[in-house]
Amino acid sequence: MQTEYFVLSGEDADREIYKKAGEVIKAGGLVAFPTETVYGLGGDALNARASGLIYSAKGRPSDNPLIVHIADFEALSFITQEIPDTAKKLSEVFWPGPLTMVFNKNDRVPYSTTGGLDTVAVRMPSNPMALEFIRAAGGYIAAPSANVSGRPSPTRAEHVMEDLDGRIDMVLDGGAVEIGVESTIIDLTGTVPCLLRPGYITVEMLRKVVGDVQVDPAISGSAENGLKPKAPGMKYKHYAPRGELYIIKGERENVRKVISDHIFSASEEGFKTGVIACDESRGIYEADEVRYIGSFEEEDSIARNLFAVLREFDRLGIERIYSEEFDTKRLGMAIMNRLLKAAGHKVVTAGKDE
Ligand code: TXA
Ligand code: MG
Image (cartoon, rainbow, N blue to C red; front, side):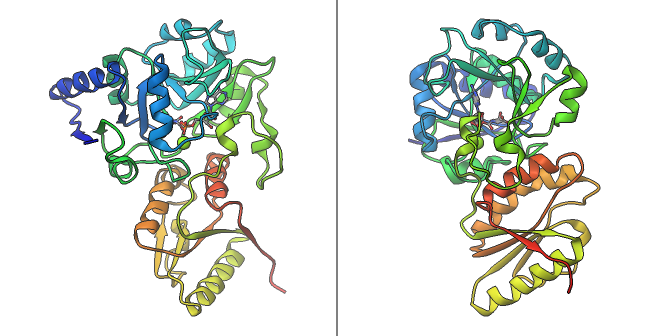
């Protein structure tokens, strides 16, 4: 299949492109599009065949449900059984934006969209291009991240092409995304709201609006703890670069020393090495490639750059990757959740000096 590629300008001229994209979706095809978090791979959420195509294009296990993207609040009642008060409150504060809420679904949503579950995850993205596209496509877009299953999520249209060129009908290029990690997911079907995936909207922010929020115990630990996550997708291997990735944690000075030791021995063994570090570590490392992805004080930049660096290291053929720990104040939980998965939980603890 030939993948059509369109660059969006943000101007009126885009209208023709949205129209074409909408027609592709209504005909049961697939279109990748920008959101504020990561690029999504969209299909008609109410068409069981289209959801099926999404799974095969991504090579995604069919029990891993898709998020339904809507463009206005009224659309929510068309696909859910009831809308709890917590959802109304959260939507007032965080929609449109990087928050996904899980509801009991109704019959309009096919089981192939929800991976066989009786619940449906719904999100209203804030990216204006995403909203235009959803409207042009009929209002209900099932969209996982637009990467091949297991690879880092795409934060630019080029990343989508790397993974899905020839496998989908169309790519809408809206430039680099703003946030860079996927939406926060909160389940509202139980008595107490439960965080299923950490993201840009933190537990603290959610608690300010709805009071008590539990955190799925399967995601709260820093290492794999054997518990089964409530969001089916959270159990799969994810985000993995081709090189072996290790996270080094501990006091900053010790971390730097341990990473430098690792670079030295990996280079001795003939491996091409890469380091992922915060801006504060500039000038410390002598790996083949070093990427400073942001300051601890401006953690948004760390979130925005993380997936792109993993992909860049793949392109450069880096075989051993050492990353500092990014347990930053606000987004630390979301960033470390992605990084630990990308590393397959390979963590080295940098001990104290003797
Ligand atoms: O930011 C995002 O959410 C992006 C953009 C494209 O919107 N989408 C995204 O989708 O990250 P995906 O498919 O890569 O991740 C969806 C996650 C998976 O972990 C899946 O298991 C979970 O959401 N999920 C979907 N429906 C669910 C449901 N009904 N109950 C529990 N978890 C659900
Ligand atoms: Mg994904």
